[in-house]
Length: 209
Ligand code: GAR
Image (cartoon, rainbow, N blue to C red):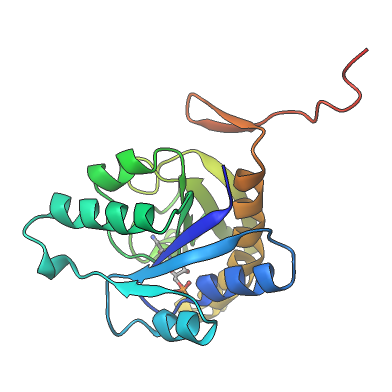
């Protein structure tokens, strides 16, 4: 896999920013070939433009079907030579044309310790459930909502006086650390999928002889 990323956003873009920053700092050896938003008002588009990145806004309503929209996303990503797609707050279910174009080459970050609390409002779900530990998950995207093989997770405590805002902020700090590292892990290769597990192969150094 070469190291050209396509980042898909819908809003604020703080995870996009963490990827931009990690690349700038040399912590993530990759380049961002394009940032695509499904919402023209996404603040993340401004961040991308300020970083000098190519941006695109593709809106679902300009396409006649979900499949046509997903095919357009796949086409735009391919045209930019993207190898790995990173969903970063892309608040839309990914359909078959895009999944097939980037099979096992699409990552998502989700603000819960999956498989707990998939879908919307994960932090509220965690608070309502009364869990004592919450966190974030980076996973490969499959046709199951927030259900693909897990690449990396980070946990945070849930405090007695937490609100959705305070818990979300604590999780977000971990997201910003986690996502660039998980992207690097996937780009570096040396992994395989077994069943629904993402398995890192042991370093072969020292194994010979
Ligand atoms: C992040 O917390 C991300 O985990 C979440 O949206 C937020 C986007 O923030 N994604 C999901 O809930 C996907 N199911 P950002 O735009 O600042 O990166």
